[in-house]
Every structure is written in structure tokens, then in C-alpha cells.
Length: 120
Image (cartoon, rainbow, N blue to C red; front, side, top):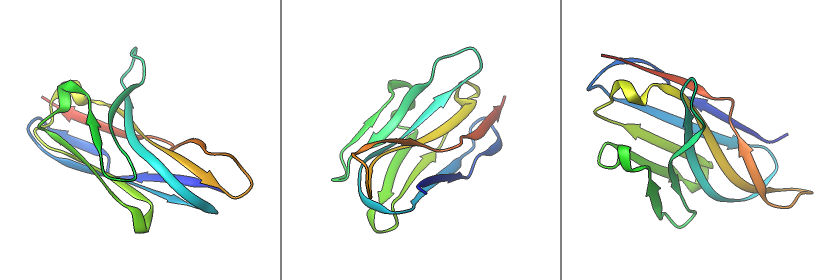
């Protein structure tokens, strides 16, 4: 069974920092792009940042300069360093990975979500 397990969410004051981690496990053949999405109450899920297997990155405009996405290909893990957090960053953050596993074509997998709450 393939899993994406997230950690690192929590409650932080505005201006503070958090680091999210997401580790993929299971019978994985290859991991392509990995990324982080978020969904606030009443809003649609939006892409925060993603990173290709080669290290190319893409960010939501509102987090540029504050968030940094990185990955460890040897550990099938993606990270999101979040600095200068704002109340508008409050949301459930979901890890996403496009992976090929034994017996399947490449497709997207999702983590269970981790809550990030920024108090003003």
C-alpha cells in the first residue's frame, strides 16, 4: 500500500515559521513531481508549491519569498519551509506526489492533510 504521511503542522503566531514534511512509502518505482496544496474553509484547494524530480520549483504568488519547497529523492520526501507566516496562510495543507508504483500507471497520490493555523 502506498502512503504519503505528512507532519509538521500546528499553531504559530504571525511572523513565525513552520516546516512541513511528507514522506512517500510503499512499492514505489518512481516519483515525479511533488507538491503542497492547501484548502481554507470555504475555499477551493490551491497549489502552494511544487517541485519536479530535477528540482525545478513553482510557487503561488502570495507565498513567493516566504515559502521554500525542497525534496530528498533518496527518501521520497518533500518539505515545505514556511517563514513569515500570515493569518491568510491558515489552512489544511495536503501533500501531493505523482508516482509510479508496482502494477499501476503513474498517477497522483494525496496525503491526509495537516492543519496549519496562524494566529494574528
